[in-house]
Image (tube, rainbow, N blue to C red; front, side):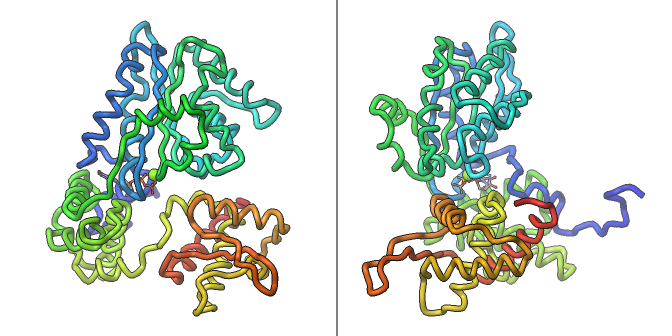
Length: 407
Ligand SMILES: Nc1ncnc2c1ncn2[C@@H]1O[C@H](COP(=O)(O)OP(=O)(O)OP(=O)(O)O)[C@@H](O)[C@H]1O
Ligand SMILES: [Mg+2]
């Protein structure tokens, strides 16, 4: 029997569910025309006359404002483009939560170029040369989007950013074979960079503002038009309700990811009840069980980090009256969680590393306690709510990681 056969009950709500998943790159991005136009303008000379200039652009804005979507849309549009003299433009997308060191970033770029880069035995300079030589010999030019760059800026490998911003210098080539799009949520890292680089970057910032309710409604309808949901399954009331809940001008976060997730979950509830339309009550239900941390952030966590986060989620639920817990307690809970899932708990230093990583990703808070009787300890907290939903989601993901043998 073939998959996707007619024995599968077909949905009366979703035409194509994959168009609401996180890795879907929308064809149209309403209210981001200006950002896309500016991105094209910055890269035009590079695309017209490859190698002529070194392009470094920053996309800057809060959660769910369309930075990743814009970068990927632009990337898909230029990938494979043939420029003057037979040169070919290639695009690579790198997420720094998944690729956390310069080495790993270069590996990903290499892979996207069809190059296999060995796991060990190369210094970062050698890797850069390897990549560069490949570009040179195949007459290719690379545009790379470095997403979640905030994470990189906060790590010990923060220099990685510095090296990327002056890669042509590092490899000593007059031709600029690579251009970069750096994606940031905030710009505090800028001050850590060299003055001259600071000023170059400051002139190349494209800002993304949170979406208003009516902009979100346009985005939702566009996704319906692109074939995610049957047009007959939604109406203005439902769309506007989501807009009201999420729109920046209505006191919401202005996050398109949240708006789309609400549509998706509301659709699931309608489906469960066998209806062919989404009702306001579905949206209300959906709103009460949105996972408080973006799904793509969770997806990039290592198993150990998920276990630690689960431990924190449980502790905070039990200790109803505190918002932060001491590190020692968290570690004990972490050990228990590991036991529950049959995973060998890691040593203290590694657990610390988990806390540091989660903190850098902005998932948890970690601060030194005030000097008290018991000396200073680190207090770890989580502002995300609701915790039960997070707990449920983490357990699902942890089981899946274990099933797939990930660590
Ligand atoms: N203007 C838009 N039109 C259509 N879809 C959009 C638009 N802006 C964002 N989206 C969708 O909303 C979701 C979130 O957008 P995106 O991932 O680009 O946000 P982001 O700015 O990168 O957020 P974060 O900082 O959290 O990574 C994605 O599914 C994306 O496809
Ligand atoms: Mg993003």
